[in-house]
Amino acid sequence: MLSKKIAIIDYKMGNLHSVFNAFQYLKIPVEFTHEKEKILNCAGIVLPGVGAFGDAMKNLQYLGLVDLIKQEISSKKPYLGICLGLQLLFEQSEECRGKRGLNIFKGKVVRFRSKGIKVPHIGWNQLCLKKKSELFKGIQQGSYFYFVHSYYVAPEDKNIIATTTEYGEEFVSSISLDRVFGVQFHPEKSQDKGMEMIKNFARICLNTRRSVPAKL
Amino acid sequence: MLAKRLIPCLDIDKGRVVKGTKFLQIRDAGDPVENAVLYDKDRADELVFLDITASHEKRDIMINVVRKIAKKIFIPFTVGGGLRNIQDITNILRAGADKVSINTQAVIAPELIKESSRKFGSQCVVVAVDAKRKNGQWEVYIHGGRTPTGMDVVAWIKKCERLGAGEILLTSMDQDGTKSGYDTELLKAVSTTVNIPVIASGGAGKLEHFYEAIVKGGADAILAASLFHFREFTIPQVKQYLKKRDIEIRL
Image (cartoon, rainbow over all chains, first blue to last red):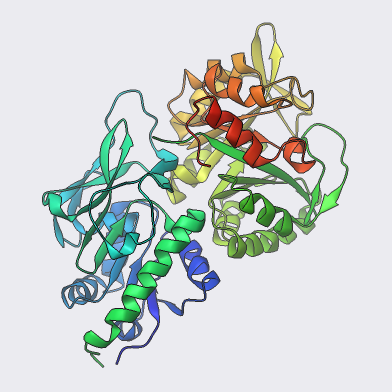
């Protein structure tokens, strides 16, 4: 059986420690690592990250984690992508043309283009819940979460959209499909609501731990 | 809708909280981590810590303070004061700060804005600007408001944006400590020129001052120090007031 720990992938991007701190604060056992064996043995994966799409993919490739993350997602291990960790699930980004993402979902990552808004989108904004998702259990319609980004995902399959947010236009602020979750905002910086969401993810990991075969 | 942010600011000297305003004399003390936790409980949207420690050797104390704060509060926080180079910035961000604020050094060596935003992203880089009125315009001051630079505030902030600054923390030296309101003209001059968020600072004394900074000045966020520090107003009080006046705010 898999360990109770959740792997937070350490791939030298910004903001990783805040995510680690939040899990620690909630006393959720985590492994902050880029070692394959450790990741394989964990009950869930968190891919955080602030920075550029191209750099993030380059770092994942350098660490040899691209195929591993794809395999883990297809074997139904719970995955939570935060900010870049959401964007990387898609085919490509306008931020870095020519660089492929993890390609789990069809669609691309696009930049805010509406007139009269400031980019990056920084601050607390509201979620419009679009479908039922375990990750959003206990989170009310219109709850505020902390955002800081210039790009957002445009999925081809609208059924994966979990929440949208209004900023000059209505954009996709999170997606979910089975046990794959991706959020554009930062639960680790969104106070009580964010902590609630992290606890929800930890619960999803624990609940599915038994059904995912250990590979070691 | 994106909410306006309410940001308490704490001045830190050798690891302790001191005074309330930037250009007035120092008084009081407290533990920064305890203060941060209290503001977090009050639902501040963000926090700013300015390290005013004069001696360079004692600056490492701040790194430890940042590390402790990062483990206790889960809202974004900015750390500024005396950051001179990319290494100083790296250390503060690695310790857990979400953003750094640079002021004097940005003026002396503007390439630091470029270098740090390229390395960590614009969202990490706040340029703090101390502005003083002069002949119907505003002049940039550095060294904690002691040294005039001869530079025009609006032109300088435009340059900061071009170099990659993610936000501007704009303090009116004329208003700071007066409690007679933010300099809404200054705010407006800046917020209508640049396309990055502007944080208003200096002059809050009444509830309507916060409202004016947003509505008349076009500020994206409002910062206050002494007012919150000495509990003349609490964060929930200001937020309730703004909400009542139809400002988008997170309660």
